[in-house]
Image (cartoon, rainbow, N blue to C red; front, side):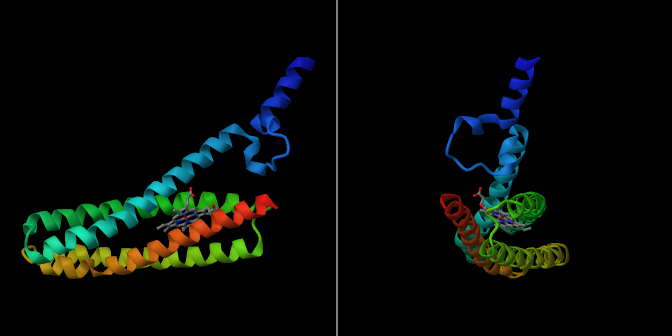
Length: 188
Ligand code: HEM
C-alpha cells in the first residue's frame, strides 16, 4: 500500500521532482497537461507562420508575377481562393489555441502587470488583423465571382495583405516579448 501511494505521489510530481532548484509552474505538474499545452503551442506557431509567411510569399513572389501578367488569370484566382481558405483555418486555430495559452499564462505567477499589458496589446492587434482579413475575404470572393476574368480586381482585393503582414510581424515581436518577460520572471 505504501509503495502504491509513493508511486502515485511520484507520478503526480512528475519529472519536476528530478530537477531540484528549478521553479516549476503549476501546469507542469501533470504530464497530460504538458502534452496538451505543447500541442496548443505548436498549432499556434504553425498557424501564425502559415498566415504571416503566406502573406510575405504573396507580397514578394506572387503579386509581382500577377501584376506582370506572368501568371495566368485562372492560377491567380485559384491561388487567392486557396489562400483565403488557409487564412480562415489559421484564424480559427489561433483563436482557439490563443485562448488556451492566454488562460494558462494569465493564471501563472509570471503574469505580472507588464505581461498583462503586452498580452492585451497583442490581443488588440490580433483582433484588428482578424477583422481586416474577414472583411477583405468577402471582397476577394466578390472579385472572383463578379469579374472572373480580371486579375487586377483580385490583386486590388488582396491589397490588405500589406497591413496583415505588418500587423503579423508586430504580433510576432510581441509574442517574443511575452516569452522574454516570462523567462525574466523565472530567472528571478
Ligand atoms: C486570439 C488572439 C491571440 C491570443 C489570445 C494569443 C495568445 C498567446 C499567448 C498567451 C502566447 C504565449 C506567450 C508566452 O510565451 O508567454 C502566444 C504565443 C505566440 N503567439 Fe499568440 N495569441 C493570439 C494571436 C496570435 C496571432 C494572430 C499571431 C501571429 C500572427 C500569434 C503568434 C504567436 C507566436 C509566434 C507565439 C510564440 C509561440 C511559442 O513561442 O511557442 N498569436 N500567443
